[in-house]
Image (cartoon, rainbow, N blue to C red; front, side, top):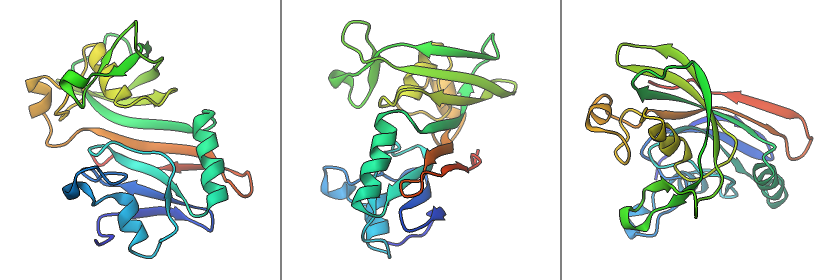
Length: 211
């Protein structure tokens, strides 16, 4: 499996920062036809030591970090767990929010009857918090910056849907108009900041959205 279409944003002895393309899994899926993924491509093409630290959804593009040794993996995983990393996403959302920024604090859970969807659930859901900010307004949609404080599955997609502004091209959550407005899910991990696992130096990576 080739490394084509995968941009290495940064690499050193401890870590790799990759610009993951859309429609590529972060890790292998359970089915035999879902084995092609980012970590496998890296491991089979010059980075056999690559270890996944966190994930991006199949359709989400952008910045993702992998460790190159066990100690770095342990430290980077701890930073994500303890919310010492900073992440920002760029997205296109349907409609026009009344305000220019806000916060969404709604608990989320996986919904087996509609898998792989997630839903807001005030009784069984896990705490989830997202900040959003309008970057640019167009006739029928907006470009927004999304900052997740928690890291729940599908958090940004469900939170924006919950305030009436689903992401363009979202096959799981968008209404027909928002789905038809773009050929891909318009969600991109555009900023990632973390501390280097060996030196402690604070690093920041930026990757503009392709939409």
